[in-house]
Image (cartoon, rainbow, N blue to C red; front, side, top):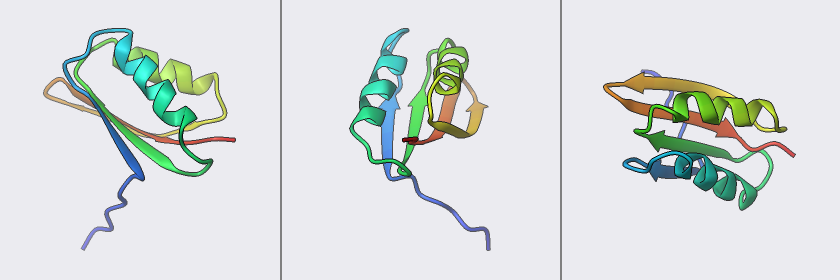
Length: 80
C-alpha cells in the first residue's frame, strides 16, 4: 500500500488568472512555518512557469509538480 503524504495546507487557485495564483502562493507561504508543506492547485497555464520560477529564487523547495487535464499541482516545502 503506497504511503500518501498530506500537505499541511492546500491552496485552491483554480479559475484564477495570472498573476493571482502566484500572489496567493506567496501570501500563503509567508504565513507558514519553515518545513511545512503547501499544495497549490491551479488551472492557469502560466502557473506551470511562474510558480517553479518563483520557488527557485527563494529558500523554498519545489517537492513535486504535475499536470493532469489542465489542472496544475505543486507541492512546495516552506524554507527558512
